[in-house]
Image (tube, rainbow, N blue to C red; front, top):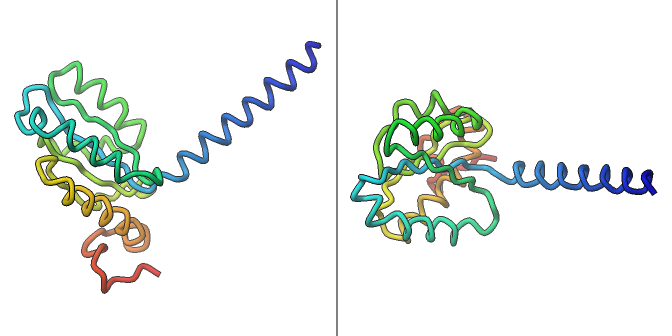
Length: 154
């Protein structure tokens, strides 16, 4: 009986590891949302923007990370997650709250940024452009003009 339980547990661990790897491999863009409790833009637009992001991420291409800049404690907790994702250095220069920064999940190159105060339609377009821009930052190391219709990443 112990052998069967051991085999079952091993199979379950393998399945969970496979599912986790599969979910991570689907992520093309890491979207870092800079927020703070004292930020008026965040207070007025945060919930709506999060709903818009979720609605436009049905394929799971985006991983959203909250970078809470409210105080030293929240900054410390957020910086641990950014470090885990390899974005500590990249995010060190971006301190504006109420902003979303889109990074290529593999290369960590900044693709674009947008204010959460923008309309749901503008947020959806920014996500689409960031998703299209992933191939550019992979091939050239830059994200300039990646989302233009004339550009082909091949």
